[in-house]
Amino acid sequence: MTKLSRKDVLRSDQFSKDEIDLIMETARAYEKALDAGEVLEDMRGKILSTLFYEPSTRTRLSFEAAMQRLGGQVISVAEAKSSSAAKGESLHDTIRTVDGYADVIVLRHPQIGAAAEAAAATDKPVLNAGDGAGQHPTQALLDLYTILKEQGKVEGLTIALAGDLKNGRTVHSLALLLANYDVRFLFVAPQALHMPQAIVDQVKAQGVEVQQTEDLGEAVRQADVLYMTRIQRERFEDPSEYDQLKDAYILTRAMLAEAKPGLSIMHPLPRVNEIATDVDEFAGAAYFRQAANGIPIRMALLMLAHNAA
Ligand code: NCD
Image 1 (cartoon, rainbow, N blue to C red):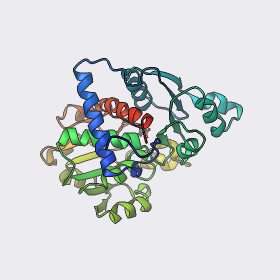
Image 2 (cartoon, rainbow, N blue to C red):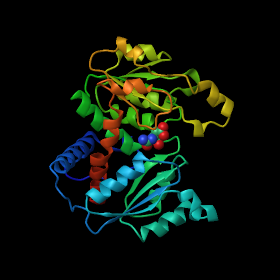
Image 3 (tube, rainbow, N blue to C red):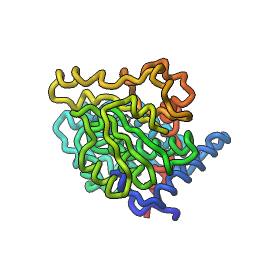
């Protein structure tokens, strides 16, 4: 397989296993080329537009760096909320406009389904960089890439996803992506922030074993990969509910005394307080390496989306 079957990247469960392999292989090749100091021109003459209606550091900067590493150029609206949307323009009209300016569009938006809506308004590839509490498929792909690099495999691993599993789009996409493999899941969340039942049902239907717990200690003892997440403050209607839950899980260095040898600790970042900073020196603390993996994965996705069948 050399091409993706569709140009848009909207959800992590849109990909076949062959397509996931293609993305991983392409990213590996790009990482190797960058490490060798190669200057690439695969997207020379092409323009990426990034439209971000929610805050971002890593996702936007790594998409933009990825496009520039490919020899392409970038036009960017970092605070899309304060551009035409502030004047009342619909997402549809903004995308129709950007269609005339760019060859690829990366969108982050607070509404679930916004990326799909954008994709319907243009023939250019649309890459979902987060649609509210929905999905974040490009993050899930860089997370898988990170697991493969850190652990050398994904098959057979026990993977714990911990924190705000209800509102966290990264864990939604990651659970659905990893369900393509023979993994075991531990979903670790307070009662009020459980993984949506539809996602639990979907991964179970793919034959993946799921255990749900509120106990982070259990995850530390059992997991090969512990994926921590931020409690998603911006998704709470009631600030007092956020205050009650914001300290639900704090991973400390002392807790790692009970960890399985070889544990990898991941986090999509930004971190608030859910991983104590003394964990950063732990050999398996992979979150900053994980962030760096956004470059080769997003290079692969830009290139493959642009060249899709
Ligand atoms: C995540 C996001 O935006 O969903 N950040 C990211 O893209 N790396 C996670 C978060 O904001 O908690």
